[in-house]
Length: 253
Image 1 (cartoon, one colour):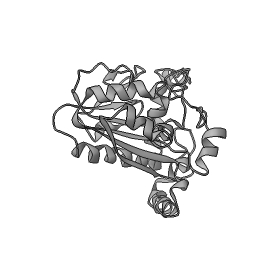
Image 2 (image 1 turned 120 degrees about the vertical axis):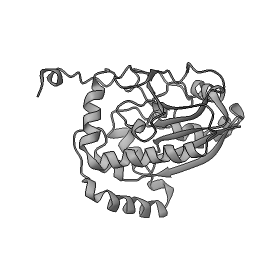
Image 3 (image 1 turned 60 degrees about the horizontal axis):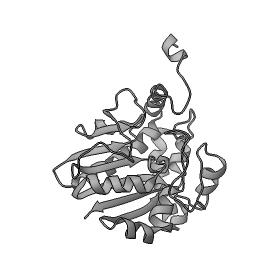
Image 4 (image 1 turned 45 degrees about the horizontal axis):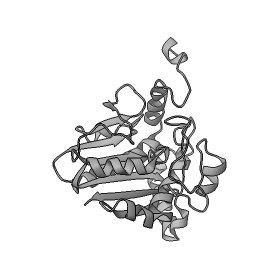
């Protein structure tokens, strides 16, 4: 171990933490395959977007989406090394109608004011531009993981789309995407008529948990990822309550 790695800070909101997380993603084949699957959703969504404007990823962190989409503008609220820009999702520094796509992987539930972000998305997207959100879903058993076995806050009973954040990564409400786009869908549609909800799709019951996520362990070897995918797909046929995550796709009118 080098002296630099020995001194690596462990705080979730510390910029140096990203080095450890990047190494962890690359060292866990099943987790890397999960990320690749999400990034393929990015490319599919981008193909449905106008050609004019920038493609932006919010909360890029330790990810590697730019490997698949070279012209993607990566960003985070933390000044991680290797990220193109520091961007606050609630006050984005982009001109009106300058973005063709906004991508987010496990980021939406960290935004302390969801309505402020949606106003920014509505302002910054070109007509026909899209937002793709991949985030947490409170399924039958995943809600127990989120509430009792996860380090992030989880409050599906919260009435407000805002929360007091303790930090960019440490602050969260894991139920936020479900709250905004399912529980309070009528409110969302009334407040943001220029953002049409085109797709709301729960998915992935088990695979992510078996990879260990960004923790140091994994129960899913890379060679078994295809089998785990088939099991997940079978469980989803039994009902969406099995899901642990969801995709939300919005289109700017």
